[in-house]
Length: 452
Ligand code: UD1
Ligand code: CA
Image (cartoon, rainbow, N blue to C red; front, side):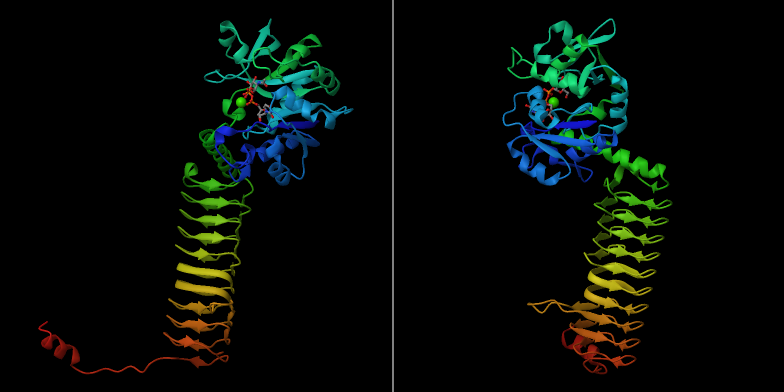
């Protein structure tokens, strides 16, 4: 099978600088959903028909062939634009629209089976309100033609069965029939749907009906886009639930199409898993967390409202609540990153802990080191970034500044409130601290003086 996806419509109702079919549904462009469905149904080649704004589509779909329809003269004309790429082919041709992201591969396989030896088969459905759609005209139950709403009589407009738009056709039939399309007298457009009447004279047009109108929803504007995204989100979450993932509030979680999640993981309310995020088995991703292109290994716990981007969380580690792992963070197995801790390009060794209020940037932390509350790596001097190394088992007291580049040796201690500007040898104690003075009775004298 060869698929031709029509996507040359201008999509003006999106009111967007981005071509309509590149708008995303659950992280994946609408057109990609359609192309994937076509390939899932066995299409070996996919041709996308674009208009002059097609460069962006070409760039985003290097795996597809591109045909150009210069002026939008109807769906039949759009398919004609792909004809040079189809010439001489034997394989059946599947025609789809680029703006129906919810279409399932299974429906297309059914369509191909239904065609059998007929020249053509179409997909039909019964929309709650049929207005706007072509109607399927039957005689003795057999499809004889499709009439476009604009050309329909009032009796034809009362037909409830509508044309969803997808077609599969025999290659030789299509090559002949395409050349015989004539413009509609009323609109001047070439209608792809006129192929149906031709097929009914040349051996009959087969059809399959889909029960769920959403599956063939064509997205025209952003409210449609939101409807499609909502339905797709539901589908994705349901598939994960069937594969052994618990969602505490399935309607309030968003999981991208490419995300993978292991069994016995629990996902809380309001969680978003985006991009190529991979979550292992037996993890807990608690409410409100947003993970983008992150990897979370088995048994890790991400507490509420943590944000993790392009980072790795090791097995059994515990992150959050309110932690921020920025790109390039690698948290070792069993390590802890607590509330209001920010990391960037930082590796935390196995079992290391940074439990409260810290910034660790361009830092290497050895296994089992402890980073006290309020620790800051001063990694930027206004010109360049510098590295901090904290070796295995070191203890960084609270409210320490580590002025990079700097290294704290294995097992060393840094006293609370220190500003570390030079390397600390392994096993040493480092301390920078103004001496403490106490003046007996001073507080009482002060209150008396101020009348307190
Ligand atoms: C089409 C069908 C109608 C069906 C409906 C389902 C025809 C004549 N009518 O109507 O029977 O019920 O879809 O949604 O086919 N396109 C191009 N070039 C063009 C025109 C359209 O590439 O010159 C593409 C569009 O980008 C879109 C698809 O073809 O992806 C459908 O076009 P659209 O104008 O929405 O068709 P309808 O008039 O809604
Ligand atoms: Ca349409």
